[in-house]
Image (cartoon, rainbow, N blue to C red; front, side, top):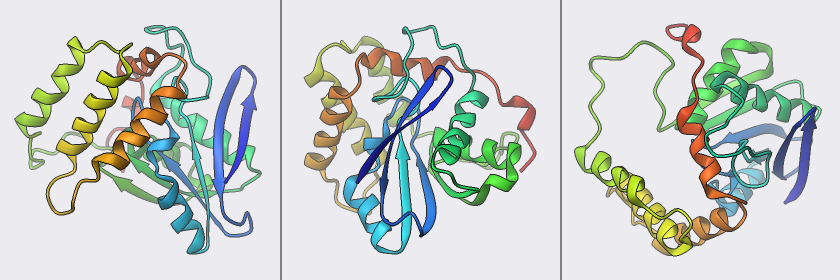
Length: 218
């Protein structure tokens, strides 16, 4: 794994790459409030062994990338999508395969619409198509909504409490088809907390607007 900081004006994006730069490039784009480490090292390494050049990066307001005061994000969702292109440019690539999870899937679609020549393919995980609301889409399980409401009363300065909450969130979102590796998720949650200067900055993602003009385009 190699580290690289992509800098564009006042924006610094911390990135990591796995594999041979001569191979097909994949950029992994994680969801809201989540840094690059939520793409597990072994997952990235396995993709690299399969002949892919894998790049993961910290969104603004997560991990080691540029962060702002809580509640004062000076950017929109579209500008967060532009960061993907900054990463593509930072690695000297013409285009890349994009793999996005949750908000990362939304950002991937925005990039494909705004910069179609920079995207080789899209893979969406736990993410809706960028379109008007689908009446046939099942509603969220009430248990998931109830669990995430706990975030409102959580002491986000308490490392142990935050880690326990995130482990629980991943557990409830993981379903039952496969065994849940609580130890693995706890290790990632601890790393994510420790490498983020102020975990409250990640909440800036929940206040972002923008992207509405692209609805219905896919």
